[in-house]
Image (cartoon, rainbow, N blue to C red; front, side, top):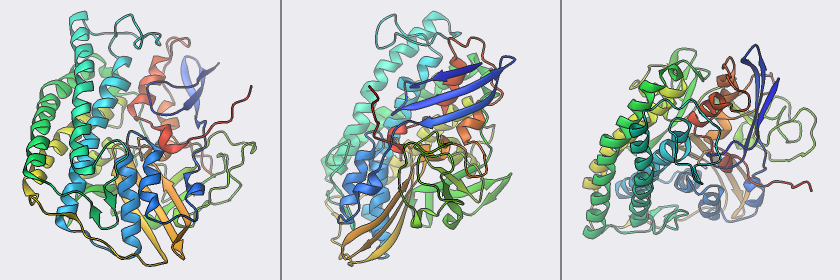
Length: 456
Ligand code: NFE
C-alpha cells in the first residue's frame, strides 16, 4: 500500500512524503518539495550587495546564515578579509540564531512526536503516537516546551543586539557588521547567554536523554547514508569551531567544493543531463516535466548522497560517532548547542568595546564568489557572479536540499528517502514512525522552495 503525508507538519515550509509499504515495512520512499523558490531568478540584474538582504527572506528561521553566506560570496569575489572584530560579531549573531533554532527544533517541532501535549490546539489535531513517558515526565517536558519559547525570544534578542534586528537583520554588509558593541550590549548579551546555557545544560540535554532512553529503538531507525558534509562555521584563527570537511565511505576528507554537482532528472527543472556545479548553475523551472516529483534539485558530493546538519558536523569533528539514526541526530544537535554556547562566552570576552565591526569595502564592477557557511540545518552555499555592477548568476544550495533531495540522474534516492527505507509502520493511519524520521533531519522546505500553484 501507499502512504502519503502531505503536508508533513511541524517543519518549516511544505514537504510531501510518499512511501510504499510491503509486509509492514517501507520498501520505497519519495520526498517532494512542493513549492518553487526562484530567488536565483529575481536576483538577476541587482546590485550584489542586495543579495545579503534579499536572500535572508528565503527563510525566517535561518536568515542569519543566508545573509552571511551572501556577504561571504560578495567578499570572496574580491578576496576581502574581515577584521577580528567582525569575525567575533558574526560568530555571536550566528551563534544566537543556532541556539534558538536547535531549541525550536527539539521542543516545538520534533518533541511532540514523543510527548503527549494537552488536548487543545495547537497540540491537537495530531498523529497519535505510542507515547511512552509517564504522565508527570510528559507534563514536565510540555512545561519546557513553553519555557523554550521564552528562551528562543531571548536568543533572538541576543542576535538583535549586534545585528540591529531579527529575523532579517540589516547589519550585514561586505566589510563587516554595521554595529559597534558597547559595554551595555556585551553585558545584556552575556546575561541572556547565561540563561540559555543553564537551560541547555539542565533542561534540554536531560530531556533529550529522557526521550532517548524511552525511545531507544530510534537509535536503530532512520539511518542516513553514512556520508557527511560540512562547509565549516564560526570562523576562528586557522579554521572553524564547527569544522569544514567530508566523511565519505568511512573516511575523512578535506572539503573540495569542485566536487559538488546539482542534478535535475527528477526535479521540476529543464533537463540538464549530468547536472552542473552551482557556479555554473541554472534555474529554469518546468512545472509539468515527466518523471519529476520535487522542486528541490539533487545536490551530490563526489557523486555521493551525503547527509548534512549537526550529526554530520559532530561526526566530521570526531566528537560524536555513535550512529546515524533518528536519536543520534537529536543527541548530536543538543551536544552541539552546549559546545557552541560555551564558545560564544569566549568570543564575547574577546570583543573590543566601542570598536566598529565594519570597514567600508570598495567593490569592483565584476566578479565571482563562493559563500560557504553551516546553517543550523547544515551546509549552505551561495554562488555569485556579477558584471557591470549587476548580478548575472546566483545559485543557493540549502541544507534541506542536500537532505530532502529527490532521486538524482542515476536514480540514487536522497538522504531522507534512504532513511525511510525498511521502517516498520505499525498503523498506516498514524504513521508516526515516518514523522519521527522526517523530523529528525529538521527539514526546512521554506529554505529549499517557495511558490505554489493552486489548482481550484
Ligand atoms: Ni529555513 Fe535553513 C537552516 C538554511 S535549511 S532553516 O538551517 O539555509 O534548508
